[in-house]
Length: 461
Ligand code: PEP
Ligand code: CO
Figure 1 (cartoon, rainbow, N blue to C red):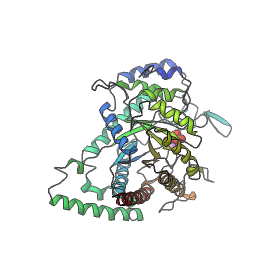
Figure 2 (tube, rainbow, N blue to C red):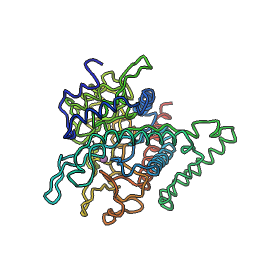
Figure 3 (cartoon, rainbow, N blue to C red):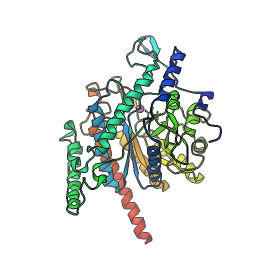
Figure 4 (cartoon, rainbow, N blue to C red):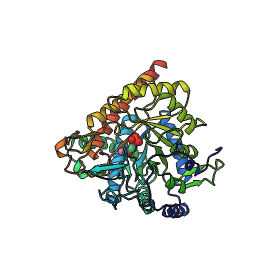
């Protein structure tokens, strides 16, 4: 890549950077990170790029989800296991509805930093630096706690390595075994309508597995039945951390530079300026990347961004993650798809139905309504149907825990019980039941798409 270096972003204007008081400590931490082993391997990122090419071409569906912000306090085996299980359940529901492979990517093992709309937070006339995620400072509203601390970058590396280790063990070590699919239902989900629907579906799959067993295919002799591919991702926000973990691939002819902090990174809606540092860093790495597109995205700017980020027009390299809001999706997405379609540029399209739908409840809690989330997802599918393009996947914030952060859904979390179990370190997440409900809606939409396609094929042949 001409004129690109792992540190060339440093010459560009940059947004959302923490103001550290001791710069020499930051440099020491960066040096330490640069000699630590990579967290992922280039070949894995390349494999994900191929999977994302399938997503862009309608041969697979993307399921990307996890915490808005991971936190040190909630970093434990049960939380990781429960998020993993819910994502697996959703993937099973979607595979059944779409008859397509589902590509699973967690917002996990590195999602510890947050862009903020204001650098300061004011409470009772006291102004302190905003909380920017555990990678930067502490959430506690206290002067000392809010000071950015570079040592946190090392802690993020350690926590991410531990999470990734467990995820790899789950994915390959038996947790994803399809014959155990009944066991993935979490205790508190049992008895809900979504759980009942899941049970019915699990029973159907189990009887197919029994048939396959009779034909000689078992989890012991067929790895696809007992293992799964699971990838990690986060917003590439703190570029000094990413730079220190960017490594040259020495194994293949391609010899590209790979971000090794995760398989996939995305550029946030607040840092997608073409002349700024985040785009500069991302254009040079060979991983599959995402670009968040909010309602202010202009079609011409988007085309320039796509050309900058994917100059070779490779399929699977770039996924556009639209996050328009339920009332804007129809109006804002269509012009973007029209422009991209006309240009011949290859992208995958994914829907983030969370970030355009955040509202403040009267109790002061930030929340999101299930109805708005569902409306945005439906709108995303409708626009793609109208434009004859591919609704490739979803990107959302969830947890396997029984939280009360988003309102609506079968449990009818309402505004008055948001305070019951509101644990998020940033934006409100779907709980396990709400995540399953979203999966069933998606499965219906995907299965309608499939029926439409089958009809077209039948008409042609
Ligand atoms: C996020 O994904 O948590 C986020 C901050 O999103 P966006 O950049 O789309 O606002
Ligand atoms: Co968020």
